[in-house]
Length: 375
Image (cartoon, rainbow, N blue to C red):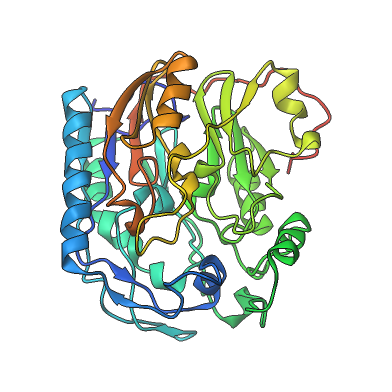
């Protein structure tokens, strides 16, 4: 019997992974979900259409190099089949004039043990993104009799899924932070919405970020789907654009997490980690003060590393401070240049999705305490 799919966390030895592809990528038109993600002062506001071909080629060069580094370290690498992203998405509920990319499979696919879930994503431009991964999932299904292939309930993404007039160009950063601290986000609770990259997998515990791309209804869905697991809702009030947990709260091995110092986990939410002797360390400062051109993401992609095992991590090659910190934390660092790929959907963790890691479903939090994060 061939066992292909198995992954319960982000740090056990990685043996099989999907690495994204930048072909045909687009900057999507503004829509209710993306307008909130683009900072007010970003040069990308109002920009949309196919990404310049020279940037696609530069991104693919780095993605291909990442794939080679992984293969050189004994990891099997699969690649998705890009769609023609420069095509409209038309449903009974909405129209948007282009799609986006399949560079960041971490957003679309969530692996929990022998199961891969196609996420219920909140961006209209990403409505069909899962199709780029269907040939791979179909093959895994044919070859692995234990593989469970799941699609989360497909959201309609009608206007009811978003707060009207939520976005306001006049809003200050302080007001934005007040909103996020109050858990006031652009998405409503009309339907189940989540990006896979908002889910931190730690064996029997799933820590899910409540933010602009994942709502509480999704957490209730996970609670009912996995009664054997513990579901926790976490949020990071210091983040004015809370999208995806993997540039904010990143586990390196059992008992150790690096946390974005501008987006610290609130004290009351730390209880479960402290009760189980987990160390939460402020991440090193990014080496860059600005993201690369045509990039939505923050400079904290410096944290968005890919852990190969409990002692080995891949970091972006120019992020010297983060690599130095990893070394001090006892990690062997593999530098990989990746800034040309950042604009297409993130850094090294974003650009990959686990298929197989060694190890099983461990209980890293046996000391249960009164936990305000528990759903």
